[in-house]
Length: 348
Image 1: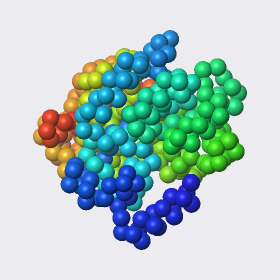
Image 2: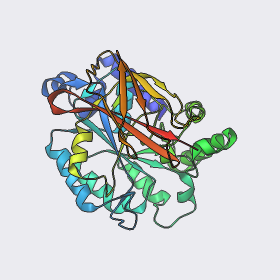
Image 3: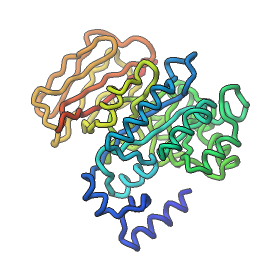
């Protein structure tokens, strides 16, 4: 896959054509039709029509409404690797570009999700942990079904061997998870995936380094936000959808979102050593807060935000409870759209 990509980039460079000509349209034609930007929204699903698992399920009614909204709302649904490769090569994508990802390779994706995405002409990326497939666990696809999706253009990404909480296991175990699953992908699909998704969206800085060393070119969490070219390539955001958080209003906010660009995030590691953390970041110069930055947590609601120039310091009234905790920050953008930046913290 990497050889093919390198060859493709070489040919595109020789011809002087845009990366986006993969769609059959010239760069100028796309630019005339829609503004070109360096950001995109990435949405994430797990299961479809499995009402026994509401926290990871999306109903068929919700899914069909999402597809209709994306079809009729002027969105550009683009494959995730094309977006990643475009940003990494200095290219842009049309405004309101959206990528669709699905985690865990449940059978309901094959039976209910993919047929609807295929009919709509929407490319998808499927992140897979190899153990459930190898063990033939009930409710999961098998390798033949995954190969069928691969043959139809579905991008296959990795989600390790056994889908562990990666920050809780040793460095040796993380290395084994990555190397073993890569070999299984190579044996069954003839490739090692370029893209990675952290199980449960959890990682430490040490895990990030190991994912880089394993040869992946980008990795995704489960924190809300808009992927952009200046983002941390191995800590990219996605909007998770399920029965509870799956209405059209939320999709509208996510798909129309703009990036809230930040640097100098503290603490840098999502695995915190102080609870509550002293959380802060510096807004990009293009971001003008003017008192409009708002941050929220699921437990405490709206949080206190102190601004000193472009530096934002967010203070929580009490400790974080539970193993995972998210803080989402937003700010108004142009044309009624919202800028998003989300951060997940791990307490253990």
